Amino acid sequence: MTKKFQTLKGFYDVLPERQRLWRYFEEKVLYILDQYHYQEIGLPLVEPTELFVESVGSHTDIVEKEMYSWEDHLNKDKLTLRPEGTAGCVRAIVENSLTYNGPVKLFYRGAMFRHENVQKGRQRQFHQVGVEAFGLEKPETDAEQILLLGRLWKSLDLKNITLELNSIGDPKDRIVYREKLISYFEDNKEVLDDDALRRLYENPLRILDSKNKQMQSMLNSAPKLIDYLSNDAKQHFENLCSILKEHNLEFKINTRLVRGLDYYNRTVFEWVSNDLGSQGTIAGGGRYDYLVERIGGKPTSACGFAIGIERIILLLEDLNRENNKILPDIYIVNLGDMARPFAFTIAENLRNDGLKVGLNMEGSSFKSQMKKADKSGARVALIIGDQEAENKIIQVKLMRDDGIQESVEEKNISLFIKDKINFEK
Ligand code: HAM
Image (cartoon, rainbow, N blue to C red; front, side, top):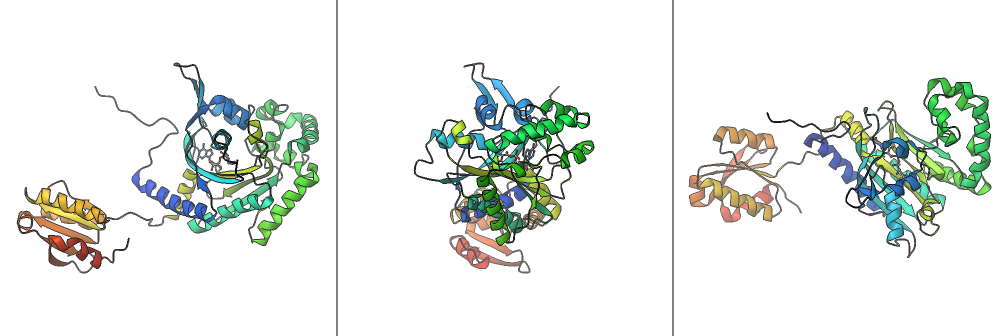
């Protein structure tokens, strides 16, 4: 008996219909990234496990329970499928001395892997576009990245999205705050759930992020980190807020926003859609001025974010727009043993001339091939039988101009079609 295989839980095929939306999204985002002068960097899917432990943090959900890690039995290396892109990007700028000549603005895209509970908008293999700026400490960089995202949502026509913003200060600001927070939680221990109790001394800030309904009123009254910021951090945050206001970007300050990765300081932000249920964050990021040094580089300020592509695709699907289906310019119908190789050559020649060509290779009846030509959405159908192959003359049917049909000599075919469809390259 043959065995059938299925994708693993949380891993998905992207079927052509959805992949088209994906491409639509990528075209928009790439255009905007070019506008803001970010350059693309390609990064490996696999990195040393230690890189993520050091950067994302050993007491985060990602490192504690979500990484696909293993030991390479050939050389005993401890490896991990990247759960996010910032760590690898920082490794790459340090390894290649990319900031040697000053600041760099980079982006990457591709698959990330986290062994999470699967639900709508939460997968085990998902895809991000990540953006990172290095060597830029002023709040204009944070503002530029946030405005870039606002511009992207607009260009994709996405509505119902809110920006949540917070500053979590610098590590030294957090020393006093951490003690205050722990003692507040200790006073409210009876309200803490198991997760919170587990994090109490390891990562108390993360408790603020909890969605547990029973804990909300206690969390709302907890001491706020924003009240413990140094003057510099406060000023940085105020400047960021005023730039955003100046550019009419609405935001909500969420003093409980801390994000689930340990490398952040000062600015943190999330863009949340109200149309996706509980997994509504479509992009998140912030500043991480201490990470480059931690990973072995010189002290370098940094700021970035990542967009979750699948979540954007879900929103685009809901918009139900007839998206940019890529249609062939030409569909070639052919019938007969002489017609087949002739049609094949014509198809290749037209592609040499830059045209998009669908070629019927099934040899089905003329009627069924014409139906396929119609369905393909091509502007022009070429009809080739053995007689046409012999005389080197092709029947050209203009599908959208009342189906007008003309005979055209093979040598003129490309120019004829380009003229009819106003082809521009
Ligand atoms: P993150 O918040 O972990 O940040 O992920 C960014 C985005 O990726 C999320 O807002 C969400 O849209 C998407 N995402 C995360 N996990 C999943 C999942 N399991 N399934 C589907 N989508 C998911 C980071 O990864 C940081 N590296 C962002 C960053 C870059 N910060 C600074 N630079």
